[in-house]
Length: 227
Image (cartoon, rainbow, N blue to C red; front, top):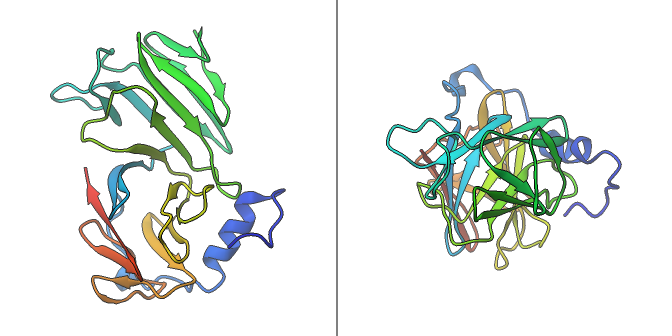
């Protein structure tokens, strides 16, 4: 899908493709904004916790928690913070945090493939899989999970790419093509080279996608749920 582009300006190329036919959004279609956390359900693939803020906190899942990523594990109530700064991500420890087995005591740069350990044994891998996007993905490599349960966590920087390519943020091997969900003017939109429907009707490029709605393309269905 993106093979004609070089990698030297990954954000610029992806954003150009997203917006090349995207017209200004009519005021009547603008909504009141987005929740900071959403679960993205992909039929036949799983559920993904979407975090839209540039500052993401991780900690133990306890009643009344305010962290962005509550984890069912023996952790501090606020164990670490991940900051996005441009194309870079840094992890700031508040509790015990290891990066590639070495304890860190100050904000430290995360690179693609970084292995994080929170506390004694909550192991996670940090990835930025798509060459044209700085959206990151966190996968548990130990048995721990988030609350609500999710298969992975997406730290969103403007866009999420779903589809059959191994480099996508969410890999959907059986799909005929990619779907890009992107953020603009505090709303979410959807784009693909294939016809896309919203709740069974053709999806215009100027229509924001809301939580509770179903996005479908031939052979695939996804939906968004506010946490």
